[in-house]
Image (cartoon, rainbow, N blue to C red; front, side, top):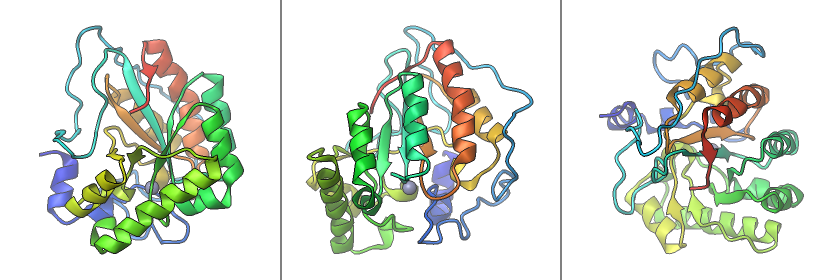
Length: 268
Ligand SMILES: [Zn+2]
C-alpha cells in the first residue's frame, strides 16, 4: 500500500489537497501529520547540497516508488515507459505573476509541460492561456473553481465543474479542448472518473510530489524531484495558488540537471 493509499484509506483525501488556492482556504489543515516540511518555511534560495540524479537506463524502466497501480479507466500516475521520458505538470494557474516566469524557464530549456488550469483563472487571464498554448504546452482541465474535495460534490456539481472549465479554457485559448483532467488534490471517485470520461478526457494524477504548494523550502523541492524521478515519472508543480517563488527557484536548479542526466520531457 502506498503512502497515498494509506492516507486515502484513513479518509485523508483532504490532507492530500496538494494545490494552493487563495479563495478556498486550501491550506487550512492541509499539512500531512508528521510532515516536517509542511508550512510556511522560510525561503531557501540556495540549496547547500544538490543530490545526484539517477540516470534513465535504456531498456529498463524501474517501478516508481509511491506510484499507484494503474487500472483501466483509472487515473494515470506515470507515463508509459519509453526509456527516458518523464512529464512535468504545472497546476492551479494561469497566474499573471508566475505563469510568465514558468513559461520563460521552460522555453530556456526547450521543455514542453502540461498546465492543469483552473477554469475561472483561465477566464480571467485569456492572454496567458493563449501564451501557454502558443508555446506548445498542453492545457488540462483542473475544474472551474478548484473545490477542496470534488468527491464530496454531487454528480451535477462535478459535471458543472468540468464542463465550465473546458468551456473557459476553450474560449480563452481560441478553441483548445482539454483532453486531460486532473482532480484537485488527486481526489478521484467513480463519479469524477465517469464525468471525466463523458467529456472525453483522461484522468491524470502524478508520481513525484514535492508539495511545492506548501512552500517547504527550495532544498526540499529540489531534493524530492531529483531523488524520486525515474523513467515515466509525472512531476507535480504549481504556478498558481499563492507565492510560487520557491517552485521557480527549485525548477531553475532541477530542470537542467534532469536534462543533463538524460531525461526527456513528454506530455502524458
Ligand atoms: Zn490544484
